[in-house]
Image 1 (cartoon, rainbow, N blue to C red):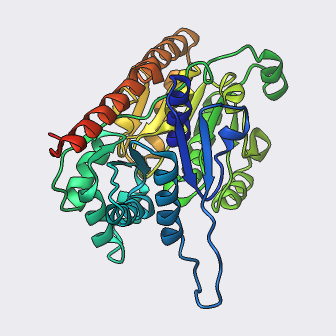
Image 2 (tube, rainbow, N blue to C red; image 1 turned 45 degrees about the vertical axis):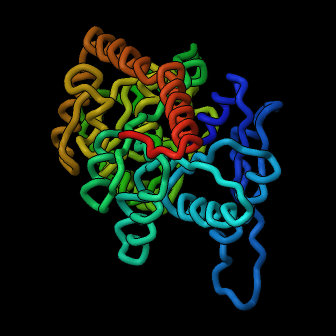
Length: 369
């Protein structure tokens, strides 16, 4: 998602942007952008291979696009397979007398999950170190990367950003009346419903809140743990107050009617869904894992709790929701914090890094940390 939004933002500023991937990002389908190009990576299947060699096909696609479109720089998102494919492409290009610098942005799972697998660790370490510049979306991820890998270069922290024009509170009172006809508080959770998101903790927290404050819970997204979350809400007798909405495109419209966002994740490299909620004036109940403390200000935009601490998260939620004026103050603080991460503040950081990397590469110098 960051790659798509970054590409769109750079396109709006007049840059020519080429996406090289196996599937066109959804956001690119929603409107035409004259200086955005999509190059599909086609992976042929052969009986010889149990698993198609995507990384090889990606490297070949990179070579073709770089040569034919005369690109100035590659920006890779996730260390594998993208950074490793870029290194492969660079070696091919050197044989033709061409070359190109590349930047790798670390997002989280490439470091905290896949990269720690001994099967991939040497490739991840090598690919990151071969990058001309490295960025991470949070200080937490930066430190985790240094701790887990032998990284020889500076990792620049450039946080995720939010488009306030897209994520902002709109008047959806009619929608709110349908879901909460008696003025109940509305709580929201958005995720891919995987184990790391601890969606059953959302259900358990909501059960405790509901005992004290009339409320409804909206569960947005889908994934492996959705069924177990639904089963738990039935066994606790709260299913009628929980709506499992599945995947939604217009999330900002749903966030516009929310009073509180719950994110009890085991780990979050940044917490973009939380930031998007805050941009819609929604305070946050989250864990203190990963990069979440970098966006959720304790006692101001919401509260932080240890992973799995249902009692703490429930008590903090009840405190925020229990008084209209207090809730209003938390909402004001949430939007104010979100505005610190508006794309107009973050995109120039990438532009500056691009210029520095290209200049250093052309002069034969190593980019200073």
